[in-house]
Length: 145
Figure 1 (cartoon, rainbow, N blue to C red):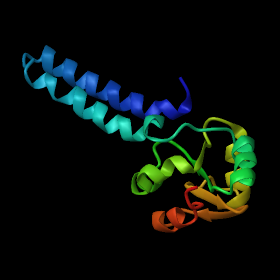
Figure 2 (tube, helix red, strand yellow):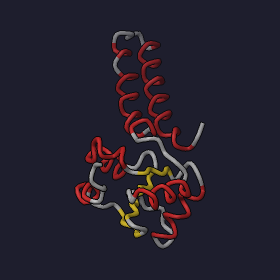
Figure 3 (tube, helix red, strand yellow):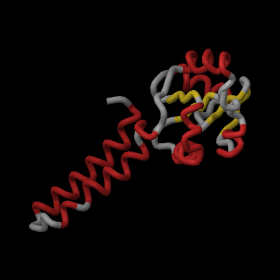
Figure 4 (spheres, rainbow, N blue to C red):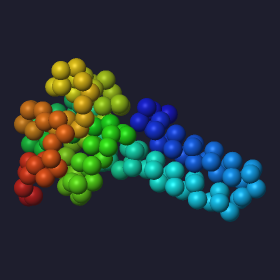
């Protein structure tokens, strides 16, 4: 299991434990609620809601070719989730790099943020922007062809 799945799995495990405690306590009907509720909390914090991540070097290469921004993110980051949600379908046009999947992505973010792993860090034309406004990021996308 990768580091990105720890938080979502903790949510599911917590829901399972609460449900088991309710069943053992003699209230199996109430045990139906916690597991889906905790699983529902885990999904937004998982890599599932983000477009497929690629490596930092590959993202830089693709960005140089097509001019699209590169977003460095990590699961569990509420600001990353906010950016992803507010971009809607436009999020698929960006190059997403999960900094927990490889040391190269984390190193790029630390270099841009004086040693901090502040995310989301969006690179537009090689220049970093930390936690930018989603509307501004949308405006940086190349026009559709």
